[in-house]
Image (cartoon, rainbow, N blue to C red; front, side, top):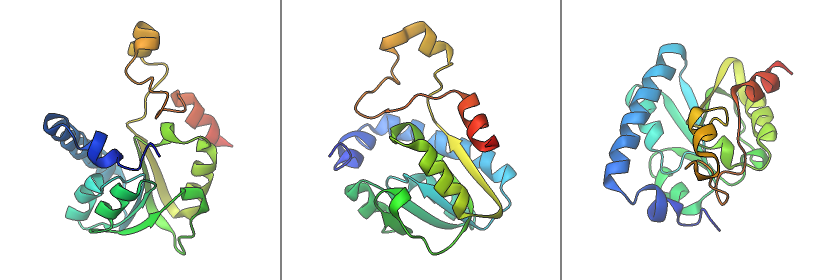
Length: 170
């Protein structure tokens, strides 16, 4: 229910924040693009597909997964899209790059998502996790319960970098 109209009621409401988000997308794309020598990308939790737009503009074949129906309808105008819980979907293909941008903290069982993503990668594929709150961040320690990333209705999990190190080593 929380994500039913998330795109229009939260994600895209503030034009100034949208411009900051666009800049972040560009910076993150440039970073990923410098490492990822690939042709196709799957964005898990792609919202309206705006992050994928940067990949598409550089010749990547773009795919998305979105849980919220409103956001999925928007992204589906541009990209091949699967709607629903990522772990329940059948993709019928593999990917060179799987993105989790600002999404892994919203998931009740993130390890299942990472296991599914690993199973969907091509032999030399990459998983890119970004824009995820770091519970070891100075702001988390400083502001404690007033940290703006403590959003109980949305951010179900809090991570540190070593969580991912352990999961990917297993």
